[in-house]
Image (cartoon, rainbow, N blue to C red; front, side, top):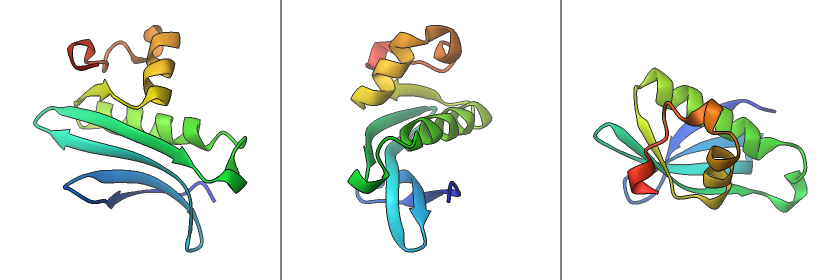
Length: 99
């Protein structure tokens, strides 16, 4: 189930998505511009809440940003809260001037 895809979204955005078959269980919407990635929104379907899917998406986004050498602007409240709670884990990619 935790096969994560990076799919195109609307307005030039992309989303890390977890699906179960055709059903979208969770997504994290991003927008890349230059060497920064803005994380706009994270959403988990009600039936999939409490299973840690948002944290799975967070890990995927962090791994992707490091591989692509992108700084992250955490506009999403979930991601911003995680960055603030664990700066030792995310300080290398956190673009603080944009959040």
